[in-house]
Length: 163
Ligand code: ZN
Image 1 (tube, rainbow, N blue to C red):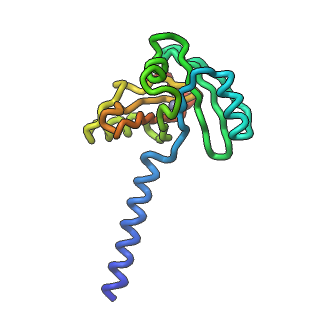
Image 2 (cartoon, protein in one colour):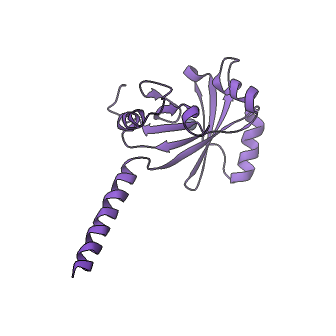
Image 3 (cartoon, protein in one colour):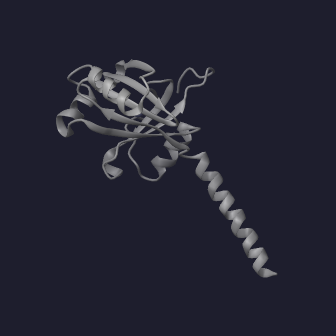
């Protein structure tokens, strides 16, 4: 009898854990890749993924040109600097082409930013800012994340003007 009760409470706990997991970092939203030549890289990823880029977008605040691919559930963001001061240019100079960041989709970016701040992570921006492809974004400093640049992103909803 007691075994049954333990079993029940265990699955209840498991449910709670899963529920909070899905409320937080829902899924990998996209992977960002720094590239030296956007035209050539778009051609390359069109061949790899067998789909064309669905959008090019400049994010002026970051001095970056982005290009997005959607292959099944997988989204790839190519990143190319638009000025010498671009963080992408600095990344290319230091590390060369390759994976630049991993972005996670979150339901409530402010809540996630607060949670991660309380966990001791350094956020690269104090408030969510407008990123490419209709998202609020925030980055975690790679010093505290095994050198992986992590982006949080939340869909910009029609009713939101800003943070
Ligand atoms: Zn990104």
